[in-house]
Length: 528
Image (cartoon, rainbow, N blue to C red; front, top):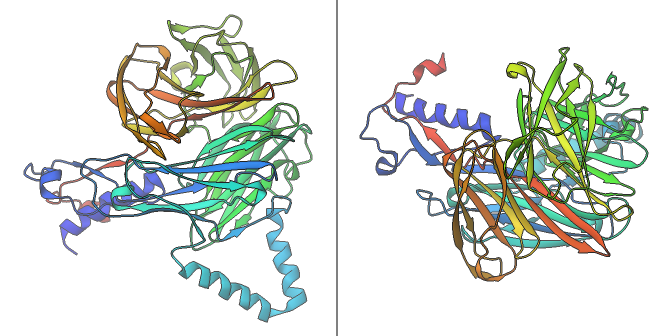
């Protein structure tokens, strides 16, 4: 194998480690600027994948799936982006951790012949690279497409994109449930598969019905451990270890079935022993609706939780630090006027290995705001999320905002409408300039762009552009032009029967570009 090939493999391998799976091809000489020996070229990702959890178990649910890729300079002129239903979908009422026992019982009843048939079926499904039924396919970059699904039969989705659709590919599912546990608006951005996730803010209390949704996109089974941490440390779990997620399947696991302990605030840690999965917590409340709780950013000594709604009636912070070290977190609110310290909550004490919760009340007081949490010297890593309530007593709705990753280059929020969309942007350290693009609408409209300056230490609810002649929904793409780091979230809101339905999604960087070393650079050392 020559050194040019080694260089390209090394670049693709590094990318795969970041995005779950991705690929790049040999750089185009002009696009890559290969005239400069040893310089790295920034190229569009050419293959990527996304996973969407099963939206709801309610027969009253109405779900919209949306898919979009921004126009990317230098991208290939061919490609596809397809979301398909997961081949196998378990009933949420079934205990996913009981698969091993069920399979054993099946062997006793049916014998080895039946087991061999099941194994053959698994292998046959694995051979089908296309997987399940196609649900949504992009037609062109720059224009989102949608699909609708009603009731509890809406599937979990497994998707791949390549060529011109891969760079910046984003998908979202938004579900409205009109009554019952979890009623309200529930939204989640589809995410890449990974091997570890943290979810502070879950619950095993009687008033909550929280599921951890695990989706396996691969041709082989994944084995997952689920650890739960409460106010006094790790909770004893009976069936949280060695959960098998079958190939190309989705498994919802009810958290309250994993432990006998009922606790209001729990941190969930998902660790994948073999394979990889997508993971998200669906948190449903009997009184205050529900929403998706995405994974927190990786444990860090500095966290930003962007875009707390300005009319929030209650903000509850849940935080956890792995390990044995205690930490006093410094708490600040990035408001439109700058960083301020909430009265009475200047610092919050966390004990190592124990989940802590703090009621911050009406934190934002009618202004845009983002929480900035800092450990002394950044020495103790922390994960965190907030639960937000809007509305008056008896007619409240809830949503979650986890600690977010910064937008390094570009990020996109989907399913926006002309009314009811709020884009919140914060630059907690240094000022930044961003460009926001409103895409064409799903049913018509012309793209629009605006540029904004975000002052240091502030949060701003920007007046995001709307496509000209909009029909349908549209995508909002945020690109950093200078300064930063920048964090952002998008809120969708409506009112139904006097209840303020809403959902908040932080905007992660789309990781649509990758630095690829020049082919003339000797990377053979990486093979040692």
